[in-house]
Length: 407
Image 1: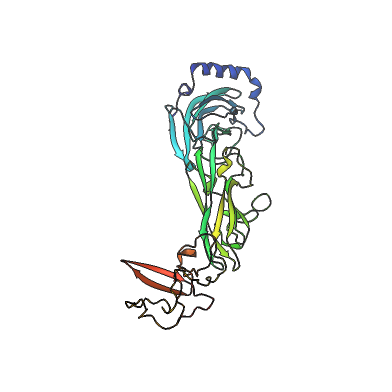
Image 2: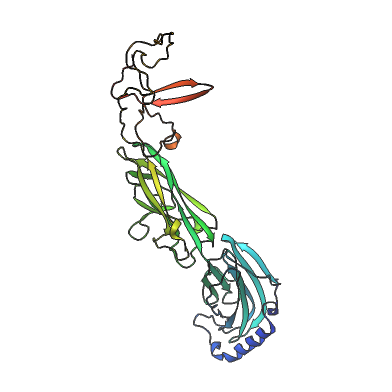
C-alpha cells in the first residue's frame, strides 16, 4: 500500500482556504474534457509562472490541480524533477527524494486528497537556484487519473524552462604542433567551460559546439564521430565524415559541466608541398550562433598551427676567420700539433669543414626532435656522435649541397 501524506505537509492553512475558494469559484471547469473517459477523472495542472532566478534564490509558487473529468480522483501522486543547477530547498515529510538519469533531482509525493469532478486543490512547487544554475528545466505534475506521471508532457504533467540570471564562459583551445610535408599528423582541439554555470540547452537543439576549420594544405582523414561537416548554417552530414574543410563538434549529451574540457582528436594528411599552415577553432553553437550566456568573447577563438620545414638551403661558403678549420688540417680531424704549430695528424685534402655551418635548412618554428606520431626525425643525410666532457651529444647535419670534399 502506498504511503500518503496530507496536503498540510505541502502547503499552509491559508492554502486550504484558497483551494476551497477556487473549487467554488470555477464551476465551469466541471465539464469534462473532450478526451476524458466516461466515469474517469481528468486532472489538469496550471502552468507555473516564468522566472529567471539568481543563484541562491528560492522559487516558491503554487499550482492548481483541477478535475475536469466525470469521476473523483482519490489520491494523487505528484512528481517534481529538477535539472542539475536546481535543488529542493528542504525535504517535505512523506516525499521520496532521489537522483535519476543525467543528475536530475526528483521528489515523488503522495497527496491524500479526493478531488471531485469540477473541484480544484493547490499544491506548491519549490526549488532553489544553485551557484552553477544557468539553463534549467522543471518537470511537475501527475497523470490524468492521479497516478504517477509518465515521461511525456501534457495538461496534467508540465515542463517549465528557465534561464538563471548568470553566465558561463566558453573557451576554445587550439593546437600548436610540428610535422613534415607529405606526412600524417594528429591534432587535438578542445572546448572548455570556465563557468560559473553548467551548460545544456533546454529549449532548442542549437546546442553548444566547437567549430573546427582544418588548416589549408591538409586533409582530415580521421574525424571524431562527435564532429559533423558544417555547411552554410549548420551540420551537413553525419559525424566522422572525412575530407571536409569545416566541422562542428558537440560534447556528449550536449553537456558541459563547470571546469570540464572536452577533447576532439583529428588525423590530418599533410600535402607534399604544404608549408607552415594554420586553421582555427571557435566556441559557438551547432548553428554557429554565439551563445547569449557567454559574456566573454575574448577566449572564443584559438589557432591550429602546424609548423613545417621549408626547402633546404646549402651552407654559405666558409670565409677567413670562421670557426671552421681551414688549410692543411684535412676534413676536420683533430690530429696532433708539433711545437711549431704544424698539423701532424690530419688526413689528406685541403679546406677543412666549418663547424659553425648549418645544413638542416630553415624551419618556421623549431622542428621538434620527433615528427608526426612520435617518429624520430633526422634533418640531414649524415649524423655523427662526438664525446664532449662526460656528456654525449647528437649532432645532425645535412651534407652540403655545394659538394664539400670528404677527403
